[in-house]
Image (tube, rainbow, N blue to C red; front, side):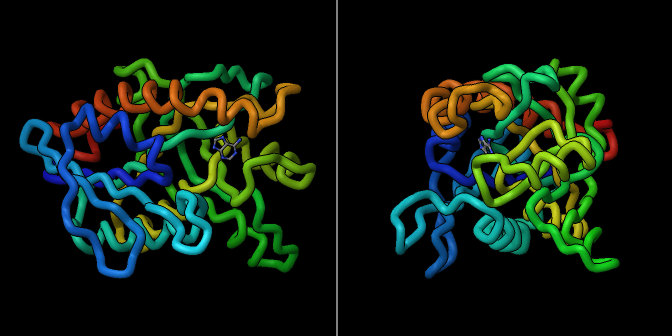
Length: 241
Ligand code: ADE
């Protein structure tokens, strides 16, 4: 493929991969918080687009709104063959996750916090946007595969739990379904790569686990993301499954 766009939410998640790619900052879009970086990997252009800081609150623009807009902007500007939504996520002990595991998206991206009990809208709320088939890639790089489920909350309430059980989600984060929504609209395949910072069914508070493991998980993410980029660069999207 000619170009891969990597969309990321937090500066700390992006820092190790930007270093390892030797990526250079490139001009982004006036007024928008997104930060663009560029690297070349064996003739494949790699654009890393980070959501950037929220102007009002001074924190990284995590969550679905910034992710969707960032994806749209980077896709229109660079026309990538593949979009990778990369970052950290929660997993579950009862589903076999361990801190530092890196998962590749499988099958579909879903939401678990858009509960709309009106016929037709219920399915719309859940979303179910396609994930690019990547079982071959996962096997070759020794990565776990799972359905990625998205919400705008770090914690998990009873309603989330019920919807996640129904969809079969194994990785919980805050951007992927929004990225996949835009990807499907623009007919650009989307893959998620997510490193586990916290175990949602562990007795330690999710936020405490997240803060304790963010650095390590971001390093694990960078290591695997580099391998994923190198696997994808000489192939076409159809050859990742
Ligand atoms: N990012 C890292 N851990 C997460 C979690 N448990 N939920 C949502 N996003 C996350």
